[in-house]
Length: 268
Image (cartoon, one colour):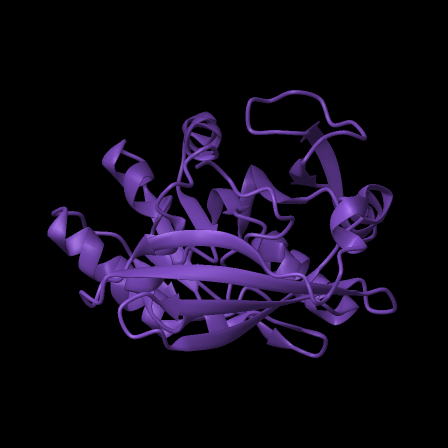
């Protein structure tokens, strides 16, 4: 299993009007078990970090899925996230690996750190937790304050898929199947989905069903959709220019059939 094709897998914790992904991040161990198959973006972000030739900041670092492997490759990286359970898991994993990584609890819309970075990146569609214009403006302003001269800001979001946006809201589809980290057999995660056209938000519910107990726990996940020209305009009007634009993590050009929108941005 590689990156899921069901239109909206991300990992950032952000509470704001219209968009809220906080519920699914209650436990870093479950998060890691759920996302264990995902690996297609690691080489891309490692290459970007090496090109930066300087300190790196990952926004929405979660449990360190990317932060820790980049540190193992010698990258001077800091991780920032708003969800304490995710950071607790990240710190434990880093300590187990014998790595010292500065993990910071903070909000991507308003963080203040005492250093600048040659690369800041926000991976795994995390920007899609930012629902309001004010959220986006806060993100770009915070990034601009922390970029060193010549630095780059890299982000990825889904390219909205019309087939997903018209799904039957009563349809339930499986999205993950993993071993319960508490030793309770396996967990099957099914998803229901509806699209809020006025807010451009995918409203998702994940149903975590324990095969051992038969009990189901529901967690909500609401994600903002960014359309291609809209995303370029948001970058432009927040003071950034596009240095590169890709449609996947292999570096292929962006096009209508691309599943990803990956932007490499520079402060104008």
